[in-house]
Amino acid sequence: MHPNIETPLRLLVVDDEAPARRRLCEVLEDCSHQLPLQVVGESDNGVDALETAQRERLDALLLDIRMPGMDGIEVAQHLQKLHRPPAVIFTTAYDNYACQAFEVNAVDYLMKPVRAERLVAALGKARNLTQSTLDALRQAHPKARTHLSLSEKGKLRLVPVEDILYLKAELKYITVKTVEREYLLEESLVKLESEFGDRFLRIHRNCLVGKDLVEQVGKLSGSEDGHFVRLRGLDEALPVSRRQYSQLREFFR
Amino acid sequence: MMQSKNHNNQPGVLPNFCHLGTSLRVIIAVEAGAIFAALAGATGLQDGFLVFSEWSALIQPALLITLLTLCLASPLARRLDYTGGMTVFFSVGTAVPAIAAALFTWLLPDADLLSPAQTLAFSALASGTLTGYLHLRGKALSPAVTEARLQALQARIRPHFLFNSLNAVLSLVRSDPRRAEHALEDLSELFRALMRENRDLVPLQDELDLTKAYLGLEQLRLGDRLSVDWHIDKMPSDALIPPLVIQPLVENAVYHGIEPHREPGQISLNIYRSGDTVHVVIRNPYAESGSHHAGNKLALGNIRERLALHFDLDATLKSELMGAVYQVHISLPYTRAPKHRNPVAPARRG
Image (cartoon, rainbow over all chains, first blue to last red; front, side):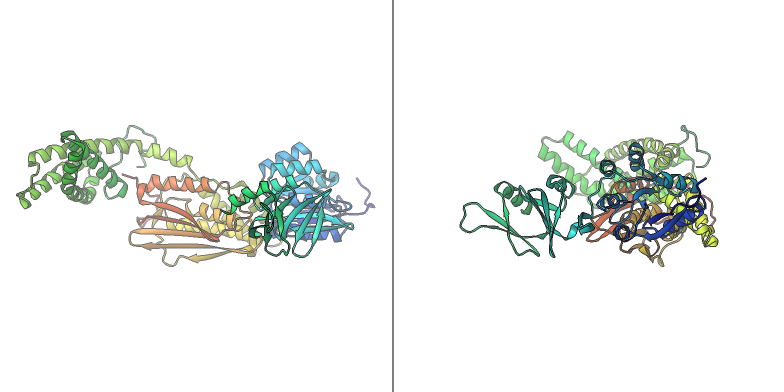
């Protein structure tokens, strides 16, 4: 038996279904007699959960995997950008592939409906996720992220993928351009291209642009075979490499 | 049909000439026979087709009259045993074309027609072949065989739905026990329907009750995200349909149209009758991003096959994407349920 003098675990419950959150809170309350804990808040979506995780000091998230928009695995990915990422315990009603991946990678997860004993056990050993584990989970549940995340001055910044005009590789970083501003991201352009192939189009060795935003493909004046594209919402024109031009033409045929 | 459950040597089921599928098969077979005969007796290909088109002009009206007579004779044939019924069909199929041919000879004395004796021989041959074919076909579709196929096609519930629903019910047990009771009742009704041997047609009202029970459970966990627009005031409640046709389609609509989206969405369900056809139209919002697609085709294929086993070509299932709305439209023949509520024999195809 623990002497109940340790500080209680600070928890966040994340699930898109209200009854599921309520049920989990009830069971957590039952557990609180065995294990000091405190539910800091509830979120019905991933973005809100990440905001809470920044604002509050959290020890662990109880995180539903399948949610509309940003799913649980993506939330866990973005959490890693926080200064001190909280532990994650995934919850799911039924996900064959994900559960296999959890077992293989020794990730804590709970099947809904959740039993109090299991919950106590999971909270007792909840730990942080590693990047390689997250990659493995993502593979078992392939889905493009809804947001890109980066940390700016110690703060987590989420950039909705649908707001991105272009992604440009520059030296060490990738410039992420939205209508409002630019962000610097530490990822690989090749990986981004394969993850977001539906949304972005390569126009240059170092540049991907939003497919639906292309307004004009034109020829540079005063050059033999230089071309450019113009994007909706962007003043400057972006150069198109010779190699990508033929593919671009193919796409807009 | 009840006693026929596990026998394979039972007499087949009498073909139903009032069904489109059966009529179509007969027409195609007879025309194929005619084109074969015309080509065999002709001097060249062109000549053969010429002869065939001349024959068709006479064969088709005769054939249509025959099919009409067969459809009208069906109630009589059904009152006899299987052999008796087939004999009636064979006799009608032989005699009516011969009578029609005699009539044409009388109406068009100048035309170069087959003699009544020739026609009689032709129609006896065609009728005999077709009765034989339909006999074999009826055997292949005998209740035992059809039942096995129907059972393999039984609709299955998504495990995800089951566990999420149980979780939602548990969440009510402490705060709202009455609602929890009601939800468990819905859940058991749904599972009773899923575990039943679903080979018999059921009244539309039963299927609708089941769909409502299902939607009640979804509403419990999805809350405001799910709204349903019912257009069922013109629904023929007594129409017979295969069980678990509407519920799985509505489940699909929730799974693909509501669950993946954060914004609330509406499912619309429109059931009505026009003439002898019952229409079921289900719509759900569609957004390219986030929809999970696997499984949808499977469910549609399953339902399509079950409709075919019950109604052959008389039932159709069409699915189409209309902008931001996905629609499934089923039409099936209107058959009325008897007043008492015993299980009803499925209308077998012909």
